[in-house]
Image 1 (tube, rainbow, N blue to C red):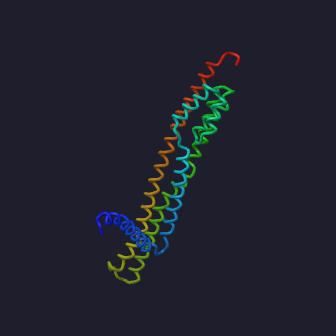
Image 2: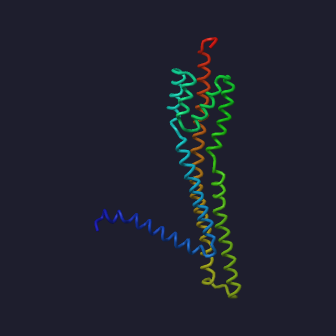
Image 3: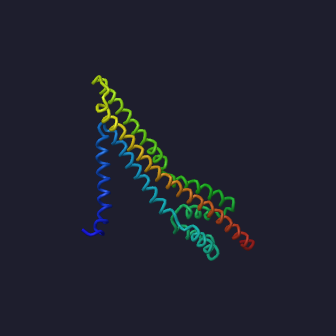
Length: 231
């Protein structure tokens, strides 16, 4: 076998070895079934995180390019043309723009109120599911600690039944009990990483939305100031 073939096989063998170790340790620590809640927590948490990431990626647009497009539409075709641009663009920024443009006939104050109100609604949509992800991050280590405490109780029951404190008697039970804590902490770390990534992405989208809203209001004020009297 050549060196290239060997290097290509090494990552695969390492991955298979890691998976085998994880499965083995999972089975070792699942004597009383405490590993299953941790695994379910990880699966549900990853499902929520992936759904949020996909949704946020679809909602994320080139805000600067979109603002330029809306301003050009305002100059060329007025508010109705800008509304058409917003209607054909996905994402919270376009939705907030469209809500503000629809209130343009009622004055700038109405536009500002609409932008603020719809901005809050869009932000709640962006943050949907985060409370459950945060809950799962807290539950994972708790399930792990619960399994560890339960395993320690069983270890002391074995000591009591044997009437002797032998290292070989309790070492296995304590090791199995600690595995639940290890898997609980690993699950919490993985989900926390996704949670922080999602929050940072939401913060960036919200900042873009706020900055774009300010530019929209400024553009509408200039449009109103340049409009001939009586129109």
